[in-house]
Length: 358
Image 1 (cartoon, one colour):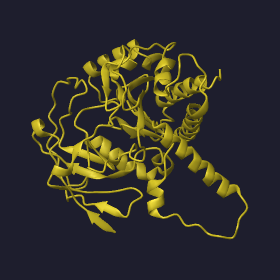
Image 2 (tube, one colour):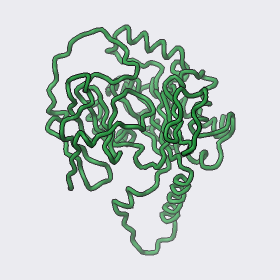
Image 3 (cartoon, helix red, strand yellow):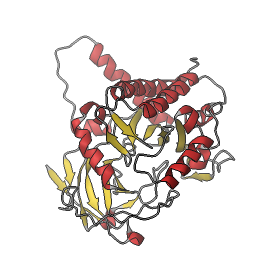
Image 4 (spheres, helix red, strand yellow):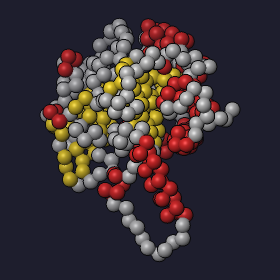
């Protein structure tokens, strides 16, 4: 297998972030995401290998990096970093400072303080597949799950803050809230209106965390209407309807898996991605239809082998992943994660409403 090395000069800011902390990086190709994180999240990704059905619904885990210990330059990586790229015949070399080799400083107790979405202070980063990489113009939505957003180790101040956020948003009644999103509007898109706190950038309309906090259980549908570019209270038709049905199929499959796992995943998110370019989306649907016809058609006796290059070039319709596992763990003997499932079920009902279902 060919080896490819990334030097720190080749890592760039990751621009396809819909929500979360600052400091996320990528490589020049956009194939990977380098996300500052805590050891608990790395451990959870390692443990997911023992849960293969669940692992299908999270980003591919490629390795870890050790960042500069100086918090002022927390995003400075070691000179050469490594990871394995998905669906590719090349790998990126990880230094010896992978998860098993990183030494940890003693934990020092200190008062909790909110990060407010800023760069977290950490020496660690996790390298994941970029779920949005196959898309020409990815529309991205981050939905934070759970009515309870803190884990058992959270100090009282953090519990109180997150409980207040839940009470004031859709997190408490519905078990989810929109944490952020970005939608492709076209090269000549106008600046954002009052529903978004950030102007359009490079043809995208950006919605930060304040956008999702304005909704109630009765009005949150509007956020999904914005994501799928629907008129207010309209029933989804055409390509949007097809995309929503694809997401519902994935959500139903994920729900089936989570109902059979014993876990506790606080403040995890659903990451929705679909093709925002109308032409690319039409092409992706055409490709899917041709593949389905070929699969269900009469066998001509010919064999067709798909190359890695064909796999990489195939247009994508949509993708759904569960992300953000800083406060996640397996919980044998404690039953399924009702906090997570409550939010997932509520999201499904909103999407069903967009299709005209009650």
